[in-house]
Image 1 (tube, rainbow, N blue to C red):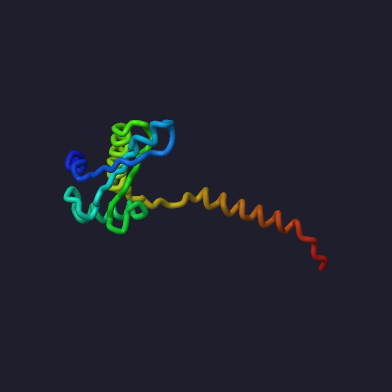
Image 2: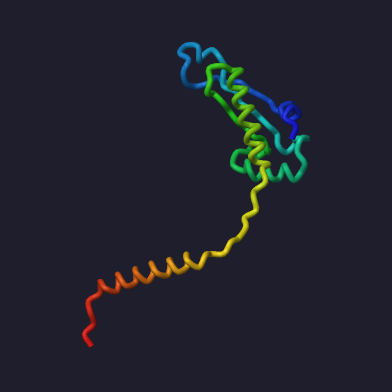
Length: 134
């Protein structure tokens, strides 16, 4: 994955942010929104696109566009850097291969302990019943 090529496919939009800033907040568009068109990206092959689509399934629009926003800082430049960093981390996490689980046997002692506690619970509940007079 080439980060510079990936960054060239990003588009940014700046909007007015909520939060701290006083009178200044109404005049400055400091919130950064990042837009990435996953379906038309030339950086990823079809398998990677499929994997990322599954990873971002709740975050993608109907057109297959990923939108991330950051308004943590009062600086437009800082918000752009934060949202870009978060995007790159999400892409890296989405492309990460899952480890194959190795099946192991349940130890004999664990089975024995489970059956012992099961027996103790059964005895405890049986002792709660009134005795049968035969």
